[in-house]
Length: 214
Image (cartoon, rainbow, N blue to C red; front, side):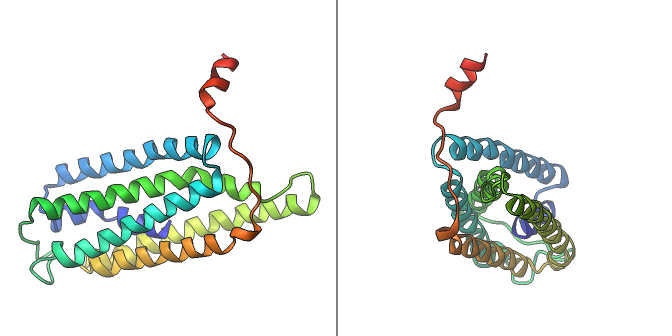
């Protein structure tokens, strides 16, 4: 959550100050990007429930998420913040080539794909680790979701305040690299638990089951 909002919270400002878009165009592009995140959530949910399983879906899309953040951080540092020190309220950046702008859009849509793909799956995968029939595990499940949503809100708070402040001052590279680092750390922690996870087999194409219900 920290990584995603570290990019998304000031994306309109980035498009106006760094890429030179006007406010209407920037807001429109961010709306499309946000909508794409939710479309990719449908893809992630389908793959996790029907084909890949929840663990593989979470792992694959988190890797895509980290790759997108890394590409955004690198392209911003190497190509987009020119002349050096631009991107704050007083110093807009110069023109960019089609390649540089294309690289930026590839990176943010990889972020949308990665975040959207694992977002509907990660909480369900967490719930899979607890047996509701067992009183102790049922209590642990409640604790898990309490800490889970606490972490989501703390990540959002940090990105909307501290990271938002640095990005508003034009220190975009720092904000993006902090987002990349937090996502990479989350991926490593997730993979470290691999030997202990419980897995449920995917149930195949949901369309046939849906048609049977109809």
